[in-house]
Figure 1 (tube, one colour):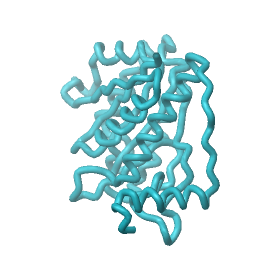
Figure 2 (spheres, one colour):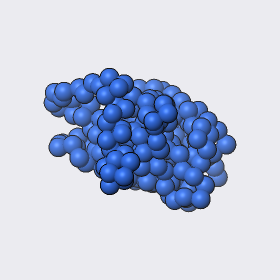
Figure 3 (cartoon, one colour):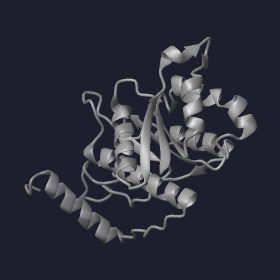
Length: 225
């Protein structure tokens, strides 16, 4: 059994929806389990994050998925404080070396400079000696027949992205389902690395992927198109 942690910060609940979806994807894979850990502002004292119970729990995991809201074009200050707290002793002792890592983020804007946050998360993982896993789906919603319900409708590969309209309480269905698929991929790859469990890689052409997105849109709308 591989153990994966989904560590997240969520200001208004939007990013938590993605965290829950990634956990669902992980738990859908036999031999994998996910635990959710929320990074909270009350654990920051004099600008420094301190929760040794949570950090010790992460030490025992096979992989860590990192996620936070994108504020003003970067990772939230609360989550950045958590990342910096891993410097000593975890970076010094390479405690997270060769653990699997991945990332996700959310913002209200279509772009919102979310890529900057994913770059921050991935560089952190690289400095910790971790093995990064990205999104593997082709881009959705990049043609005239696309829709918000498409998988990978924001065309992201470094990590999962969610876009939540300011007057809504969750990202689009496409974003949520893309996060779930990333969770399953993380679990499959972690099992391969840790337990040597083989898996078959799904490969689709872009026309096939678009056809599948149209079919899932029809299913979500009850066949009404």
